[in-house]
Length: 120
Image (cartoon, rainbow, N blue to C red; front, side, top):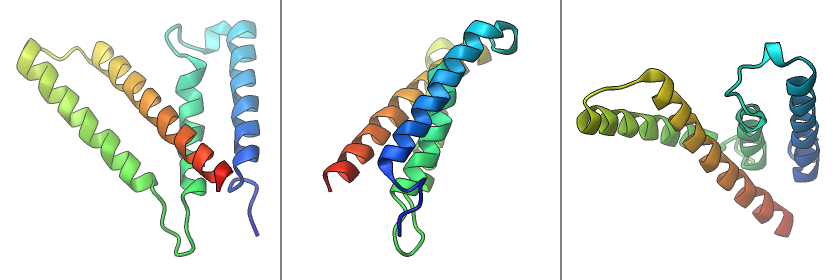
């Protein structure tokens, strides 16, 4: 029996609700949200949970640890490139650029998993 979080269309519904609440929150109480925080930055955290539940198999294994390992490796590589090429590491600029790349990667991966699950 499938759980609610293991069903792709319920996950999309949850993501839509979170997105709408974020949009409403940014408009109604802007002092709670930093100016550079986008709704996609918060939704990606929920997408990571969706990746966990959609790739969970019978033995309890998921693809999420590999995604997190890839994120860590990408962060180390970006740090090395910034330090070696620019000879400086500005934390604010680095973290924003890193998180935007993570956003893009997680969105592409989650979309692929949802399409694969829906077609299957």
